[in-house]
Image (cartoon, rainbow, N blue to C red):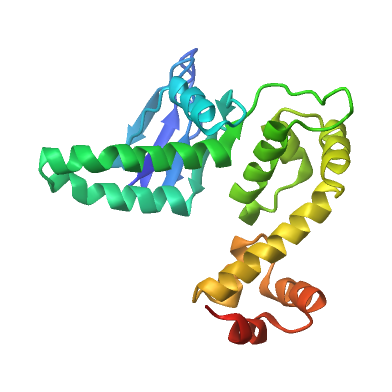
Length: 242
């Protein structure tokens, strides 16, 4: 559910009880499973884009992409997701388009939305390391894809492990044995690589790039960048702008 206006509502639980009323701001979203049903009580105005995505679609996506299966999605309420907001913005003009035009475009937007949700919020079934203590290629791919999709959130190791179906100990030992790097070292390297790519290809501010790449603030980003590259990010951008 992508909210198009500020909305006040509460959840109605299976036993009929209601959770406290909460305000969901315009542009925020909720992501819930309908396996056990879902109901809300709305106060006042309600405008939203509602997406119903069958779980079978995520299974099909994983099979076609050669990626590990997605067993479930993280439940989220009232969070801000720029990608989902952008997709919603792209969908709104389609309501006024001729049917044949809309029907041509919708599958591509639906695929983009589903792939984003799978990568950012997907939860894999319980996983196990191979007999050698290493990750399979698909397991490694899933872990790195999850980190990349959630880089701005700081990607704590326990959340990565939960999303990818491992215990923290198995994730850390398997990742080190497979890649030769600890999870935290790989994330730090990837974060810096992503930041350099953003600096060279976009006009985003230093502060925005720092946030998107998971740095706590601009000052920490500048310090980490100077340690890795030897120059401040602004100077590096001038020399490497595409």
